[in-house]
Image (cartoon, rainbow, N blue to C red):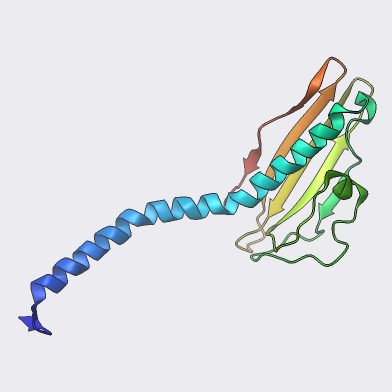
Length: 163
């Protein structure tokens, strides 16, 4: 049988080849999609941790880190990137850390500090709801400063990274 002057077998072979390409590319596509969803919180938490640690290196341990900053924006974006209203990132801690967004983003962030006489620590968190199902992805990075050593940063931990 011929279609448009070509044998049907050519169309079947072309269709089979396309299916092979689609099925072999799908895992890589899904892996890249998953990774792209984690880029924002990973890069932004790294920025916060590095800035907080740089500040701590020049301060006494009992005041190493800036005060805690609340979840910002205060409502976690649900299923889409948000553009912040002017003043969203005006909390003194965000300003001290130089942390803000000029472009749409999909996560809300908080900074929790606990300064003490011998040890100070912080936790920076990112919360997202990328599929708008009410279940949050949470990323956290921690750091500490002690009298006996230089400030340090831990690895980023994830909970429900692709929720």
